[in-house]
Amino acid sequence: MVTIYTGALCGYCAMAKRLLQDKGVAFTEIPVDMDPARRAEMEQRSGRRTVPQIFVGEHHVGGYDDLAALERAGRLDALLAGE
Image (cartoon, rainbow, N blue to C red; front, side):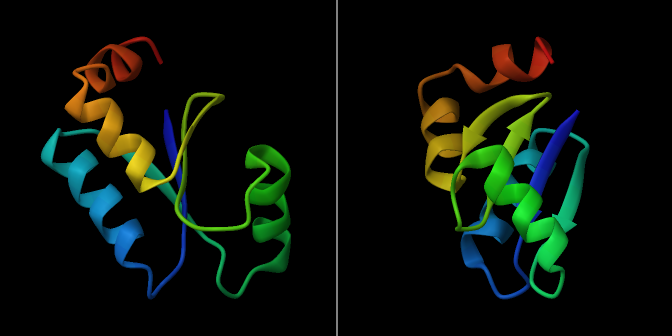
């Protein structure tokens, strides 16, 4: 299961979702803009305050740049397959 913590006006969030959609990957989106509890959950899980924060299962991928780097390196499919 892929989980993405997002913000409404976040271009990197949109790019991360688009990359996953293009790969046919289903994901759960958790908007944190107006939800302090969800933002706190994201920060506790990831150790980061910025969006997006992407998880494959319990594995913290990071943000969009990290997701895109995995894709460029040819390692994203294997990570997704091993969820």
